[in-house]
Length: 252
Image 1: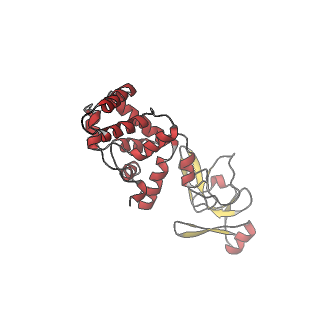
Image 2: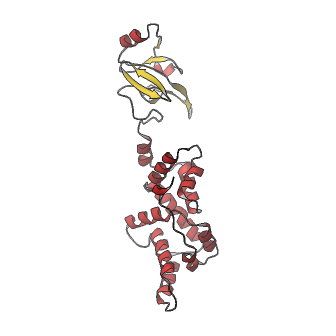
Image 3: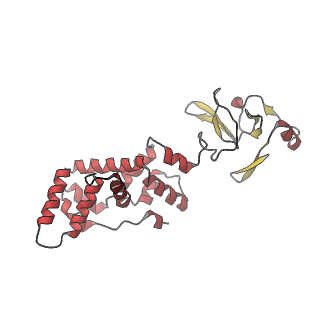
C-alpha cells in the first residue's frame, strides 16, 4: 500500500482488493469508477483500490479525484500507475510544470500583464490577478515564474506596444528623440537617453530576443508618473519621472 496526505488527512492506495479487505473488512467497492461518487471506494484499471476524494462536473464532463490523481469519467480514460505529482489537474503534473508548459495565456495572465503595464508592483499585480492566492512565498514564486515564461513576456510586450502606439511613440520617433539627445550639447541627458534605450529594447528595436526578454523582466511596469508623461506625449520627461523597481525576489 501507499499513503498520501490530502488536506491534512491520510489516504491509502491499496495494492489490490485483498489488501483492502484486510484493512476494511466491510468495504464496498464500485464496479465502475466512472460512476463513483465522493467517498466511494473504487478499483483502478490496474487493480488497485482507493477512495474517491471528490467527484463533480467540470465543463460538462464528470470527473473524480483520488490519491492517484484527477481523471475525467470517460471510457477512453484509465486510472492506473503510480500516484501523480499533482491530484488537482488532469495532467497530474506539478503546478509549476503546468505553468511553464502552458501555451495559451489564461485570463488571469492577461490581467497580470495589464496590471504590470499600468504601473502596479509585480507582486501587487499578481495579487489582483489571482485574488485567491494568500501565501507570500507562493505569490513570490509564481510571480517570478510567470515573468520568465515566454507567453507572459509576449503579453507584456503587446501591452507595451499598444500603449506606445496609442501615444504615437513609433520606432522612428524614438530614434529621432535619441538623436536629439545625443546631439544636444547642453546639460546631461544620460538619464533621458537611458530611458529611451529601455523603451527601444522593450519595443524590440535593439535586436536579440535575450536582450528584449531581460528588458521586460527588469522593466516591470510604468509608474503612474511615467504613464502620465506618456499620455501627455512627452517621452523626454520619462527619465525625470523614473523610479527604481524592486527585484521580485526581494519582496515579502
